[in-house]
Image (cartoon, rainbow, N blue to C red; front, side, top):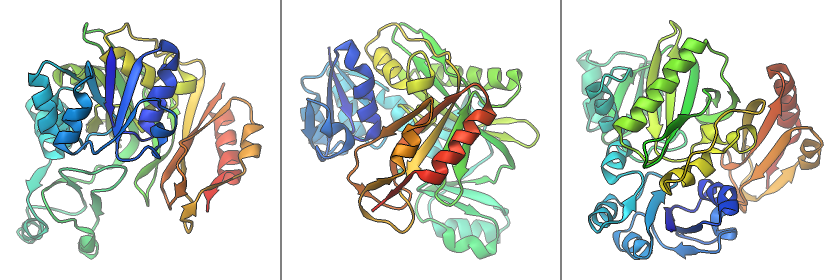
Length: 376
């Protein structure tokens, strides 16, 4: 079976690394072999996954096509599906997920708990709606397409923040009074076998709107965990997705669970599974799209994942500070993505931390935060 992956970033790199033992034939498409997976994968095609002809040419010899990023050419995937190629996730599901407005309408249609929302076509429409008191402060604006890693999101607390407004088609939703931000990775194969990982609790870098670190399992009631995992399982079945679906939740201050958004691919909220779980999210994604039995999702220990971001004030050839200090720590696992150039807040890698208690893990996180930096 030949498996083609659209995208060659760190997610593709970890897919390749985690499935070497299965001796599967994985190929990748992205614009440069200098990207993270291009440095290690034997089969890499230079091309543009947003370009129709490049995707069609890449896929002609593949049995299964999957993704590591949502922004791919949908028309090519629909045409390949018509030709009998297996596409995971299905283009019809990906089309909804690519558009945050369609996502929210999907949740409303299927009675999935999510915050209220309104759709707008431009900044001018939003300003008019504010003037007519149809939009109240504080609110969150999200562009309908192409938002990624905190991009395409504006949080507006008052009139003084209106300079943050983004132009183009978007959705507006009330700012949820968040108590915790949670996530669940669900996985499903063609046989209908479906599993979920432990609920994780995410702590965000508020400036970059990126996950700073996460803990797994989350410190929540068992009933809340069950609610999140059940919703994730329902969504992967409603979308009819084969592979992974990452579901991000808000838990508000009243304890209500609301779906924020989803991603039909390996996700930052599952990176800890490489070292903490019986079978990582990356291996389970490849198992699922290959219609193989799924691996276990239970954890060996309490786990955490720290995103390694480029330091502020540094752009250029990357240098790692404090790596030796981190490697001296027990049950700490470093995963660097092989990117040559660092930029402020750019994801350069992650570190997984295991321990018997949250206190033990927090001590290790504080040590890592103190010593390990990516500079230029």
